[in-house]
Image (cartoon, rainbow, N blue to C red):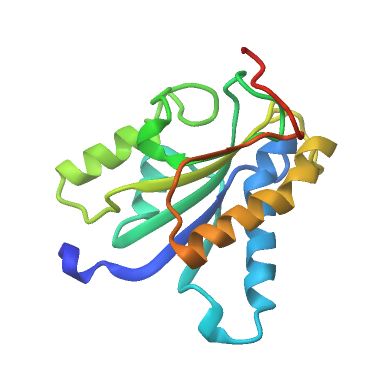
Length: 186
């Protein structure tokens, strides 16, 4: 497969673990995106997407992206710079390449490193992976429920993803979890 043969469909990935509290937000947001798109009256209004719900990272996640021209990943993130529920929309290249928490393990690597390695191996991967992430602290507690502030922001994150998919609005955004909210470390 060469770059001209890349799939002309957008891969939308809900990433996380649905039994680790707020880490399951990627699945919830993507589930809501699917519901919104499935309720469209006409198929002409729906973007051409494939959906995956995954609890993997690094090399395994990169392998799922082989052959796709565009990929959107929805996941939780913890920067400590903003309040829980703050939504980020940005390219993967703008996220620090940190090999910690459950983005990687000692037996794997970060998604950024995996994509770089895959491209060096000649794999056909997206030029850029777009990330929609929500600030979340509670990602290690066994629970199938999201925190109230995270649950409240799921519809906003889903609307952002739908906008990205339908209008190709690949622009960086930061949506604060509460009106007039400021960054935590400002």
